[in-house]
Image 1 (spheres, rainbow, N blue to C red):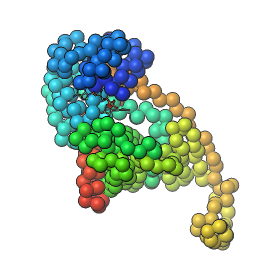
Image 2 (image 1 turned 135 degrees about the vertical axis):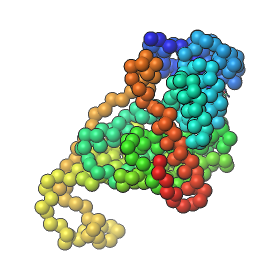
Image 3 (image 1 turned 90 degrees about the vertical axis):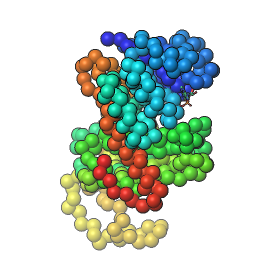
Length: 352
Ligand SMILES: NC(=O)c1ccc[n+]([C@@H]2O[C@H](COP(=O)([O-])OP(=O)(O)OC[C@H]3O[C@@H](n4cnc5c(N)ncnc54)[C@H](O)[C@@H]3O)[C@@H](O)[C@H]2O)c1
């Protein structure tokens, strides 16, 4: 079937939803947009769609099948609930809400109305993430025990509502939510049992513009998640330590490598002392190269459009949702714990 969609919040990503759907999702027609800013309504008209003058006008329009919400974060909950109650299927930008409790309220209404509710966790289809996922799925490396996942930029201060606490600004909500969602998607059966977090701010007065956090899962995987906006020499996007090797994905170019132990482990090298510029070492001496193999990263080709294609298939009763509200409930509970751990300055135990 084909479906009519309206975008609420026609700013940066709202307009992107329009272009993306037009280019890749033939079964959805974007028919209009609503924004509180007049210039965005003008832009909608220029782009050939209807400009709704109020949210009420959107709610009353029975022709609309789906609403995509792309406003600042603090408005998501109220708009989502109103749209669900008016009979619309709803897609909400991330972070779905400001905390777990708000999302519980939405899920309650979603259940009452029986409408579809999903969250645009599009970075589940990022290539760098799929490379890491495939290395584990194919068992190219086994028994991961420490994973670093990070994004580091250096553009400094957060602009507009992203720097305002009331709007749900800050990098934890902005990028952190994606990186946490990817880890939960990587280990869907495992619980997060410990969280330690350090949110800090170099330029913003109200919100975190940098953070580092550690999560421990009940399969003994420890994860470092890091977002920086003031980092001028970057580290790998992914660095994954497994019992039998290490993988890195350097950056969004998705270049990197796997180094894996091979069967040539007979060498005796305990007695070798290596004299380095910094001093002698035995434990940290480089291992003989013939004991490892260098392997190319796997080929993967995920597409962001998979998100909307799944929405159509769900509405057509062909499959189940990929991004489920209950999964995001876990993410939001983790976010709640991160704020608590940061405020207490200590590790918190949990079972999420
Ligand atoms: N999934 C992703 O990759 C991704 C990328 C960017 C942004 N986002 C999310 O999308 C949302 C919007 O981010 P953005 O970068 O597009 O911000 P933006 O500031 O560019 O756009 C937000 C728009 O919402 C409008 N708006 C504000 N309050 C409104 C209200 N109550 N009703 C209707 N319109 C309202 C603003 O006028 C603005 O045009 C945020 O939740 C953000 O986290 C997601």
